[in-house]
Length: 211
Image (cartoon, rainbow, N blue to C red; front, top):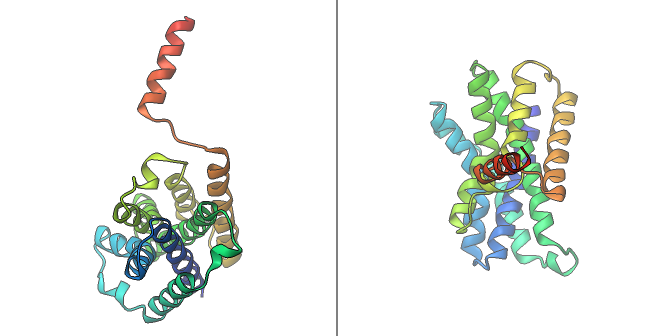
């Protein structure tokens, strides 16, 4: 049950996230479907390749593909922008839901397959961010995970919590999912970032001047 719930939540959220990016770029109907499906299923495909698992398992999800198709169709044809403003914030919100759902799901997948903690972290991060990275590349954008707010680290946090056994029940997974969503949205609101090399060099310069 946990697996199915996380799959549905993540699929719908990432499909919406991909569609919003496509609509922002003024893509046509095919572009909306392409970015939506890529965002929703890209992370799972990459995870299976990296972990050496049968990719065919990803395609045996007819219901999820149908859910994504219906979600994308509704988003394209219903003028939500008439009464929902701030598409960028909504895109970040649904992206956060997708990240948290698939990060937890990816960690659980690796645990069920008997992988050690490093592979659990990799499975979580790839499942949570892989589709978004492919989406951004197709949209001609820099992958969000590489340059903006703290993003992948929240997936790492979820993977560690699950990998060391701090969460192993449905309620605990839901709490962890909510925590990742909250931390991700706080990162967006307050522009929390991991330091870049230029940040480090600027810090060294300031230290040199003060000494």
